Image: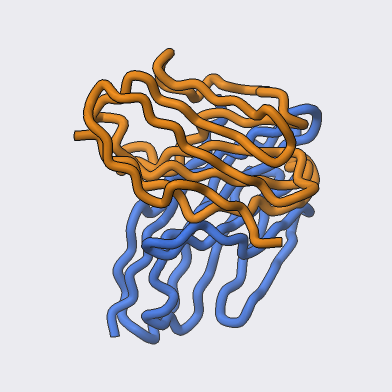
Length: 115
Length: 113
C-alpha cells in the first residue's frame, strides 16, 4: 500500500474561495481522521470517521468547514468560504480501531494558504 | 474534552546529552498510549505503543515508560544526536467506543551538534 495519500500538497487560494482537500486512507483501515496543525494548538483533531460515518465533528471550527467520506477509500475536507486564518497544514490519518494498540498512519499533509 | 499535557514545550540540548520529557493524561478507562515522532516538513510516525502499567519500551537510544495509575509516560533519549531533533507527540487511547485520537501539543526537541 502507498500509505495515506493527500492532495493537493500545496494550495494557495484567495479569501472567499471554496477549498477542497482530499484524502485516500490505507486500504482496510476503518478509521479516518482529519487534523489541522497550528502554532497555538499543535495537532488539532477536526473530525473522525468510522466505517465512513462521521463520529465526532466537535473539533470542526466553524460551519464553513465540512467533511465527507462517501466511501471507504476517499474523504474530503471542504472550507467554504475560506479565510486567511484557515491557513495551516491539514493532515489526514487512518488506522484500524484506535481502541486497540493500532498506530495511526499520516498523509504528507496539505499546506493551505489563503490570501 | 480530553486533556493531554506534554512538558516541556521545547527543549534544546547539546549532542551527547541525555534528556527526557513527559506526557500526562486522564487515567480513567485508559487502554493504550502511543508516542509519535514528527520531523519538520514530514508527517508524524509512530514510535511506541504501551498498554500495561510499568511497561517499558525501547528503540535504540529512545525508551519510554508508562504509569497508568497516575496517568503519565516518560520518553527518554540517551546520548542525543542531531537526527533526534523532532517534535515528540503522545496520544492516549481509551476503552469503550471512544475512537478519537487526541494528541498533546508535543515537545519540540532541538539537538545542537
